[in-house]
Image (cartoon, rainbow, N blue to C red; front, side, top):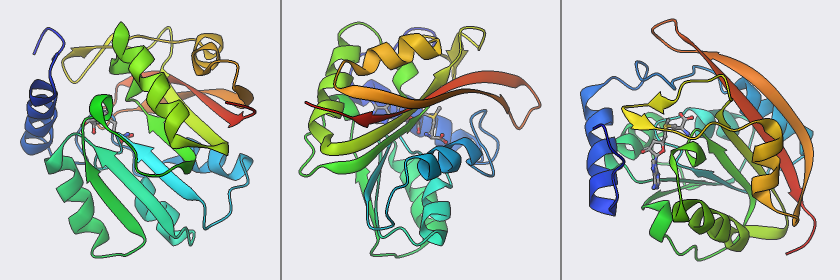
Length: 211
Ligand SMILES: C[S@@+](CC[C@H](N)C(=O)[O-])C[C@H]1O[C@@H](n2cnc3c(N)ncnc32)[C@H](O)[C@@H]1O
């Protein structure tokens, strides 16, 4: 696809095709160990019973690693049923994990979460979708909750999975969160894809200060 999918069906079709056509460990964003995510979760000092939402979590092994760290309230949301099937089959039947197949742009969360985690999802959004994302994040994050968001850096790729992305500096990403969040840590990470290409990312971890 060269343009941006503009409906839920188009978005789901795009991502399902990607996950059906590629092995989970062959997609460019695959990482065997979500090191930056786990380090920033440590920085935020989350209790193991914290409600953690991995938004656009796909087939990431973050959920496995958090289960191994004794987290008990994990939710993985993704628009791709194929991606979540991969994760579900890998993790097995585990009552500590809730799987949600939804387009985040139309999702109505039924509860709040102590941590909103997004690696490489927000940067696909443009125009009004950015405001929709911010509105959802503000509703889904608990009053004393936190967020971790990672996007491609200004010198990162301008496309991923055939789709255009918006690249952010640390300051731009922090500003996107709005005045209700205080950035507690930011960093740059260079991800190496399974094909050996390097992709600079920026990461922001922030705590909610007020609504
Ligand atoms: C680049 S992948 C990153 C996956 C995962 N966060 C990781 O780090 O391995 C982007 C993910 O976002 C999901 N996604 C894209 N648009 C979405 C949307 N509107 N709602 C929910 N998930 C979406 C895709 O299906 C895909 O799994």
